[in-house]
Image (tube, rainbow, N blue to C red):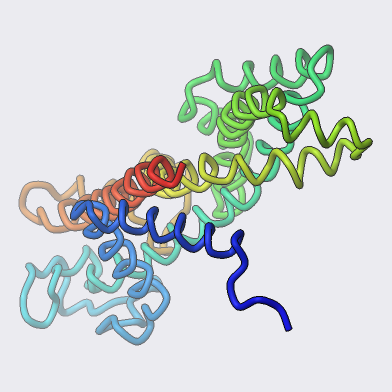
Length: 292
């Protein structure tokens, strides 16, 4: 029978408890966590929590066009009578899906590039990081606009455009961490016993990169959503009638200031999701620092 608690497991438990204590001690981090959880739950259960789920499509209630906020329509309606609250919640769902897909592609690419370049050095380092620097030298929104200028403005192409400009940031981050970790004793010991490069990269160095990766990923969810909304605002992202927060802001701006709710509520929705993930990301950073 194995011991109920090995020293390693006990140490890990204490470390996680310390990290959670640091995270939960910050009221802003907890507020961000609650806000993010609420948005995610609303997005998941959007068809069940929204009052007019059929207003996601191109048709609405033509007897209530541009109706002001009321008990029947909490956030008012748009120019063809669609409930704005419903469309914002479904817009959250689309935005979160885009962020998840973009990061699911960009993070592995950037992490692998950063690990290989940081550990191998030499010409491998030079070639990979110079390619990375080329992408980093171009403003992200400009690069995304240039890519979308050659592609049809669809959801898939929008995600590809944002992914193309996001992976270099992870490559640079992991490159710096790997360069530092490659000189540590545990890496030198693994090299001494003849461990393979893949083992050293993914079993020795990568676990020590996870705090940086998770913190940046949490912060980047909000920024990816903001970038996707910016493309839609410029007419280069998701196209109507698909509910998108950026498109709602752009469409509502045409009716300011009379139908102010068409712009104000989608803009506040973008603000809340970005703020929530930023607060959680800041809390994670402090927690990982306490863990260390």
